[in-house]
Image (cartoon, rainbow, N blue to C red; front, side, top):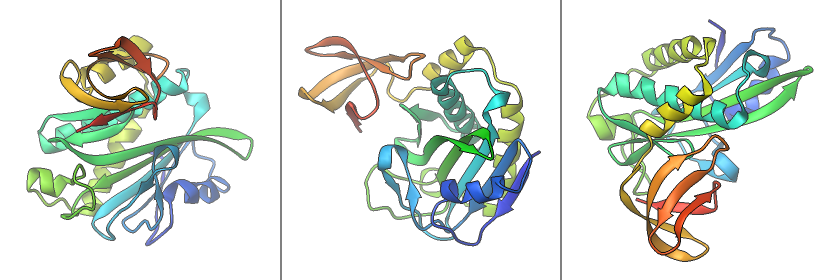
Length: 237
């Protein structure tokens, strides 16, 4: 089921994973902590986490096990993390493009996927920060499993179940079309009127779909159907 390593504290599990890959020959190696001090999000964003309340988990998987594109691998990863949390909470869980996980309109998971070459092997480095027991946040759109469900989950049990679930789902990747369809079927605020900020200013729009290249297509109120890459547009919610 892959190597699983616990760290009492670290700056970033995505950074720490490299030193474990130097010694482990497994195609699946994981590092996790409940006290990450300098978590990183997508495109240089930070990911703050209260100690002993949340999970920072990074899984390294050998890219030779997968034939899909990087964008589709990102979609699939976000989808299976969503699936795990939807099963656990028995609640509707959505994916905010490109890969934040939303529960009852609050972000509870941030995902950072990087590609690294270590010991002449290429790996997908899948980092996920999951808010589990934290109750107060500096930003209004953040939440946790506790705030959104009222349930207190045991951290160690959560990690064990989460790790086993990801291992099982990463053994076999579905077809490219199934990945795209599943991602879009769980897309946050799809086919709903939303407010966006981009270079043209603030405008209403409707998310229609995400494509195989990793772009999102939004029908803007004034400018019609357009595609955007991450950081080119911001959904306000």
